[in-house]
Length: 328
Ligand SMILES: NC(=O)c1ccc[n+]([C@@H]2O[C@H](COP(=O)([O-])OP(=O)(O)OC[C@H]3O[C@@H](n4cnc5c(N)ncnc54)[C@H](OP(=O)(O)O)[C@@H]3O)[C@@H](O)[C@H]2O)c1
Image (cartoon, rainbow, N blue to C red; front, top):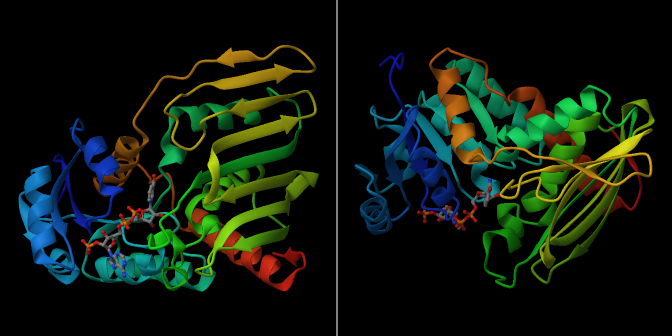
């Protein structure tokens, strides 16, 4: 059924906690509706649907993929299941918004986008931070030379997770700090400086085997350096800083943008606060995909970005595991 001129109907593939942010983003939107939920357990799906006012309930993920009233599927599964279920959804004729990170394996990213192309459907990695007005302002400031020539990008994202049973702590589901939060740092550095040419990573493992802390240095085009740290065992921290020949731009809340605003420092001067309006990034990412599905615009994020992410994550893990710098 065509989607021209109507709201795009999303189905939630799982009852994950992150669904809450997507439901809140969809609620005020006139471009999308969340109409269905699927769970491995029918009871859980029914409870979830009644708590969130969803009209359609499926007791298996496959049943959601067969639902003709669903245009697009939001894949909010643990990381290790992202590609498998994105491909299944694409093959079933659904568009897919897949939670970040799509994958740490470049060949799996290639396979997923080949499935999207074969099915003539969109596949988008859900980096909601890329949709925020704050991110777009930062990108424009760097591009227009507000800090001179870009020379260094620094990023951080950490929080403290004590539940060893959480999906983030499970190696078989591709948990880990780099996958969960470091992927934002990688996304931020790549957005501003381009594709890494060489990376050096160092990690510390949790008792479960996943990387609980990860730090890295990246060599980027035009002599730009990047560095970041991420962790599941440090207090909550978020930062993104771009440093140029003439100044710097600092974001204190780059990933969630709940406190949007950019500090611009020129030379050794006092920071000038650049105000940015608040916006719901989850709503914006849903609406961006909806416009693409209706043929009104290109999606913001596609194959090249997801592949760049996967190649960088793979190189970072290889570097940390082999104890040496890795060329890309
Ligand atoms: N963009 C963001 O701001 C953001 C924030 C948080 C998380 N995320 C991403 O969203 C994804 C989900 O994270 P979350 O914290 O929301 O996860 P979660 O609450 O643990 O939920 C994961 C869901 O996956 C389903 N599932 C299927 N197989 C599973 C398995 N073997 N073990 C555990 N659950 C399984 C379960 O749903 P059923 O039992 O109903 O089938 C479960 O509710 C991750 O990829 C994460 O990186 C993104």
